[in-house]
Length: 314
Image 1 (tube, helix red, strand yellow):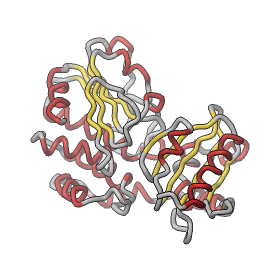
Image 2 (cartoon, one colour):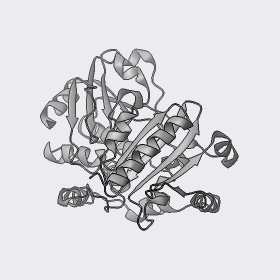
Image 3 (cartoon, one colour):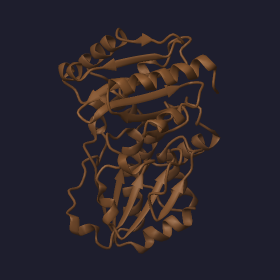
C-alpha cells in the first residue's frame, strides 16, 4: 500500500497537495505535514499546497495556501488527503494532473485517484501519513511532526474517540521524538475569544430534541448572517456542544448556506454513515456529514435519525 504511494512521490518532480473544503485540523495537519516530509526527503522537488482558507486553523505554521497556475498541473502528481468524495475536494484542478494519489481514512465511497491508500482503522489522516513516513523510513522534521500531531489530536478528540488505538499512541510517540512544544498546539487550538464562548452559550440554548431524544440545532441563513462568522464555525465548529448530554446518542447540526443545508451528524453509539450517504454525504461510522437542498430535506434526515434511535439500530 505505502510502497506504491512512495513510488509515485519519487517519480514526480512537481507535487500539488489537495484536501477537503472547510478544513479541520486533520486536513490541515495532513497537508502541511506531508508537504514538509516530502521537502525534507526530496529537497529537489517542487511541492505546493492548495485549497480554501484555513479558517480557525490559520494559527498552524505554513497554513497559507499556494496560488498555483493551471499550467503547473501538467506533468504533476496531485495528492488528495482526508477526502472520501470528489465533491468535497477543495480545488478540482487535481483532475488535470498527470497522476493522482489519495491518502484517506474515511469509509470508502468511490475511487478518486490512480493510486489509493485508504484505511478506515486510522483515527486520522494525519495518523495514516505518520505511519506512511515511519513504515517507509522517511525523515520527519519538527514542523511536519507538529502538524501531524495536531491533526491526530483534533480528529481523535484528544485521543478519546473510538478509533483511538494502541497504534495511535505509538505514532504520537514517534512524532514526539521531534522537538516541538505541546503547549503551543493546545493553547492555540482550544483558547477562545469571549465572543465565541458567548456564541456557544447561545447555541446551547437552541438545542432541541426529537421524540426519541436525538439532539439537534437548526440555524437559518438569517441567523448565520446575524452571528457574523463563517458557516464552518457554526456547523462543524458547534456540533459537539451536544456531545455530552446524558441520554443523547445521536446529534445533528443543520446550518443553512447559499448552496444548501450543511448537516453534521455525530453519534456515540450508532453507525450513522448510511444516513449521511443516503443524502449524498459520507464520512466515518460515528461522524459523518452531508449537504441537503433545503429545510424540508433536512427534517427528513432528522426523522431517519429519530427512527434509528427509536429502533435501536447498532
